[in-house]
Length: 317
Image 1 (cartoon, one colour):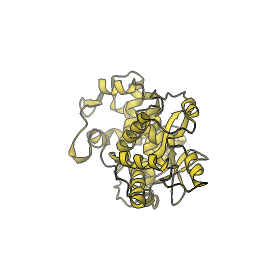
Image 2 (image 1 turned 45 degrees about the vertical axis):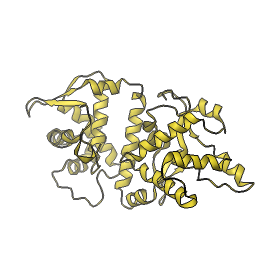
Image 3 (image 1 turned 60 degrees about the vertical axis):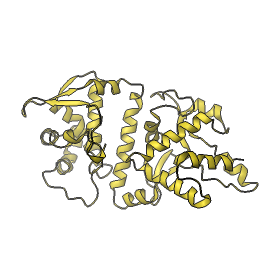
Image 4 (image 1 turned 90 degrees about the horizontal axis):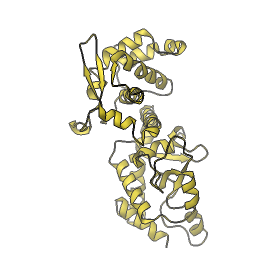
């Protein structure tokens, strides 16, 4: 949803989902403001919610949230001053821009309508939002939203942002998290960051990964190939231990797949997943661009995923 200059859209998205999951169709603006403000206060404790160096006015909601964060944390809920600031700022700020996309366009459906007078604002939650909240992917939406929020926070942080944009992320296999390459700081979980681009589905069996599913991170091209070929004549393909080749999967599916090569259908799903990331403003886009660029520089591989994967298959013999 457009460029991120603050994290307000993540907070609003989480608040909307919470009420839709409860079956609500109408909520007052003050009711919506409660989880919205709560989420922002919680995230202020972990990272910046706007780019470092951005000028923030005293009246800006983020400035108010920063001033009220300590008292809100002590109370266990947002202060009245913070809630009032949220109610005042949301209609003309995040709620006006939530449906916007890059390039001045909007998504084709709306998740809410804001009605009523300035004193008694009512938020109508639309069927489109309820469809999302009841969908098969709903169980993973909160984790995915949190993962993207964390990544944007890291891109805002001093120094870390430049590293993420310039160098992408790497994987810490001890914790199954994505880390900033330069500072080795944990950014978010691998599964949470990628699963939305797979529509919440296992890349192997294509079934939904539910909230109670045991999840594994599959190397689509088995990592054992690098060891196997490396011990004989050297591995001539790309690094298989990076994001382009990793996919959330059911643990049982991953175990059954073992170290076999991917099927044609699995490769097609991997292409679609990686292309979806490349078409998004997601910070992981840079990591995939670096993989494509590295392969093209090393062996002249095509700068698109189908050609890239053909090159990997060729390296497998």
